[in-house]
Length: 176
Image (spheres, rainbow, N blue to C red):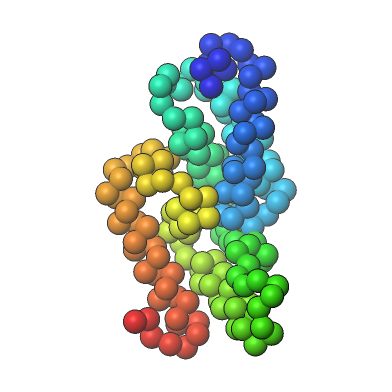
């Protein structure tokens, strides 16, 4: 990134090769739309090129990049005023070797979990996607969200608790 910041814009291709898949999956988990996700990835790299002077030498690239991505997503949602959701095929639970009864139960639970996640507000869904699907560290999420690590921990905890409540409500049970 330092080379890109210094004007070697050809090095952006290396950054793209390293990070486009992660960004695409982030957007896909949040928007549930491949075409929109691809467009947002392109927008992120356009913004990286445009705002390369804002990158601070010595800081991690990934959180800075996801912060740009989150801003692009917020702009997209604001323009489209649409609610976003996880794709139907995301987060499959179970293995092909599982017993048919167990596999059916796992598939049903996965579907309920996806429904519960889709019903959550975007901000809460976003921290779950970052922490659990993308496996970003709390420090990286804090950079993306421009807040303290403690705040991220609280947000993730509350989002997971709400997800559990929604999941158990869909199953017709009380959360324990």
